[in-house]
Length: 410
Image (tube, rainbow, N blue to C red; front, side, top):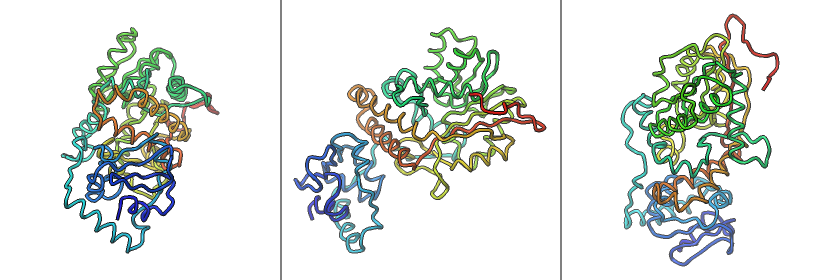
């Protein structure tokens, strides 16, 4: 059975994307803008060793599978087929074929795969290792992907023609206005990244802002920018676990892109801790990726968990709202920004492609491929409502007093 025949049997005689095999065979319409190219028998050996997305991802990261054309376009056209949909006879034939590849071409996962996980899940040490794995790669690489704002969270596009930088500014400003920031207030920003929210609050609102991150590289970059802008009296970014912040009585807390790393079992402790950091009447803005519902597991898939966000977990929005209420934070406003995240990811993908040669030289071909695959797939997931992005505004109300306006004023 040629490689083309394998694909034809699995995806049907007329798949919407072209497949090309190293044996010279092909299937699907010729001349497509995107094509999946099987460069080596090792691609099928990877698929035999780990059927499904993990095996395909390993083969792509190692270069045994190539995507000709735009990654997003290829993923969007890729048929949604799972082996359980195939007939028993076809599954048996494919199993025999793949077993031969695994026997004759044994393979190992790419060295970038994060497999050794010691310690308790979401302990401080393990969380620190997980964050460092993803973020302590290269600040230069992130500058090329994220752009000048160095903001690695969903932007807010007030107009369809807004630039990525304009949209990231709008996101920070929306958070600031939802929190009701005013000069002289104190803000705690947890999961501060490269300090975008801290810088915005200090520079544009005169707020005394403390940010914390578990990435040493992020903290060092943020401190340098704070010094360059002369904001040292107002802004600070620490290399610190948010659970170790000693100060309290803050006028506002922002958590932008951190909850995905918390884990379901830790949510009550997380929201309770943040409540205790707020003075009565103060607000929390929680901004994070969610899954649309609770019909599938919270833990991320094997590709994302091993190559992108170790120990990541996504909750449905109702779960987050309930945990906020259960732990003393009254939810006053909520919105879903999933289309905005698809647009954000499209911008990051364009940046990566524009800087592809430099990115590969900086972090290596395999890691650059991880990013190309994960960002294009994530964009598609937000567009298809397989992922969502929710902002939830809560307040530490005391005795029925919320200190909130009668209607949103942002």
